[in-house]
Length: 610
Image (tube, rainbow, N blue to C red; front, side, top):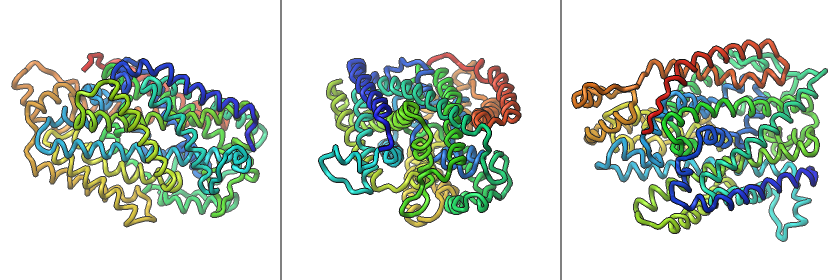
């Protein structure tokens, strides 16, 4: 066993605390369905932002990010654009505000505000729910796979089997460990609802911050008097068309990893990420925990602040940990246990580094933080899936006048079913990178076109949305079968084109939404885009009405925000490596942008609650 009893006690103490949180908040969560699912829309924006950031600090993502940082160095900061990480900037500047002004509870409910309840509304509604649930299940399975692989490094089955009254095949040991922690996450999420999740996330973020500082200090101490050996280009985020990063004289196996990743040629890969990322960001928040946190804020102003707060508190802490682990892995690569029956598994860098180079108590804190990160992500995603199935299926079609006790019991049953299905997907879904690429490159690629149009084109209707989603998501599900060895990102233009064609054809196959519905949406949400007929109709009724929509200002702020986000990523990386000149330059750029955004964004936030 590689874990000390003290470290194990820290982990168990945290698990007990999560159960206590769920039990203490159970009564509050049962006041109403809104209190259970959205905290009654009474939680402060900074707590929701911290909770949202904590949910993004997931264990599988951290393992993957340590792997790509080890392989690609500073250029790994661009690879996270696959999500894309800068969608938080689009939300910060305007999209979160637009979404919160609609004053709904889920993305499916939002469709009625945008399109009304005309022909095709039921199909569009059901497609949105189906997509949201598939996405949530995929993310939960993705986290489950990473957690099991992580824990297996510290609690060998040869030790644990002494206390388990049944035998488990070696290939399923990681899944067994994952199930145990999944059950704890399920308990406090189901019992305490959104408030329990947010409080748990605040606790988790505190532990993760301590863990990040600890690993950063350990890395700096080990690096003192030593030097990491890396290929040319590893220490700079700047790049050319070709990656030109050759590990052959240092660790030849890493070149094989680069080739298998498929991120080449690098210039084309970056352009495709940026192309996909911009459209994915314009589509607005995906129907998962991120959207639920936006809808749970008190006001549109708070929604924007919450989204902006995410990058500020997430990136410095997360990248302190990532670069800390990367430095230790580079210094002591020969001491890491990365070998498997099929070769080198670079996703084991994180757990192997923790096992070898962290002292007792610190190891317990780090393990607790990373396991808590899984629980936070899992519980937040579970809450989102519950919202769609209970709000948009059960209460809409089966029992609209259900009592609060009936709704709570339904939440518990549906939540339990979701967890079981996600575990099954995790067991048979492949490794972390496979699931990640399918989620961000395939599944969400099919979501983009229809959801960009719903914000920016007045003529878009239920029919266009339904057929755009069917075409996009259907294609996304088929592509891995038709092109099993192709990186999902390279398929995005085809996926986007098919979804866009389905959206446009579907739109003109049905009448435009009712003008009264469009005018109400336009006056309330105040979007920019192709809305001139609706704008003219509103002005005819009320010539004094003014919109605050400002495309140029929003896009200028987005560009500044993305640069600032890159700076927040680079600062801790330079700090760990003692590259103080580079750090000072990046810090200065960040300060200048912060001053500009204070005037162009923060001071102009509207405080009127939709």
